[in-house]
Structure formats: structure tokens, C-alpha cells
Length: 70
Image (cartoon, rainbow, N blue to C red; front, side, top):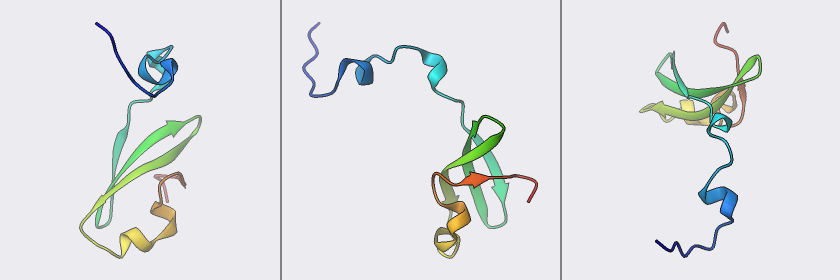
């Protein structure tokens, strides 16, 4: 099989599957957050909600650190 792609080889065939963290779903008031553990803290990946005001809150923005205890 021949694969024609514009992407680099390491994007098509990642070197190690342990690079990908298993995402976790955390309940928040009004929706849910999909987070990945980054060392000792969590990083927001995605916000799942039907409340448009939650999308305007910068603490739920993708890439932000998230502490579930707060």
C-alpha cells in the first residue's frame, strides 16, 4: 500500500503511543470539561456545554490549567 500525504512521517506514524494521554471528563456547573493530565496538573482540551456564557469564561479555554478542587 502506498500512502500519498503532505504530512511528515512522524505525524502519520507517531513514534510512541505513550505520547497520547487518555483524556478525562470532569463535571463542572453547566457542563463538562475534557482534560488531560500534564504532570501534576490538568490541561483543558475541550468544553462540552450548551451554556454560551461558559465559552466566554477564560478559565475554561483550551490550553488553560485546571484544578478540579476549585
